[in-house]
Length: 124
Image (cartoon, rainbow, N blue to C red; front, side, top):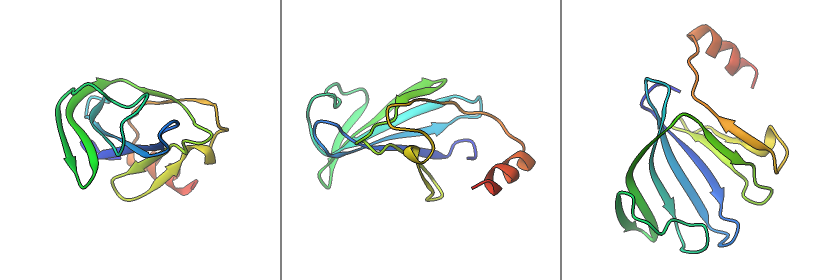
C-alpha cells in the first residue's frame, strides 16, 4: 500500500457480536498511525474513553483523532471475529484464509520495491 493510505482492521466483537473497524494509516517512516475506531454498540471490551473526537454518524460510534503511532499491530485471529485487513483499493484479506483461528499475528509495515510488490501480487 502506498504511504499515507488507509487500511482497515475489521472484526466482529466477541461479546456484542457487532462490527468494529480500526482505521490505520501507514506513514513514510514505516509506522502505523491508528486514526480512528468505528463501532455500533457499547459493551465489554469496546472503547469507553474518548481519545480524540467522538461522534455518532448513522448509528455508528466514531472515535477519531486518536493518532497513536504503532510500530506493529499484534492480534490473535478470532475464530468468531473473522478478522480481516481491508485496503483502500477495496481488497479485503481475511486472516483465517492464511492462519488458523487462535494464531497470534503481528502486522508490520515494510518497504518493498515495485518489482518485489509485482511478485507478491502475482502470488495471490
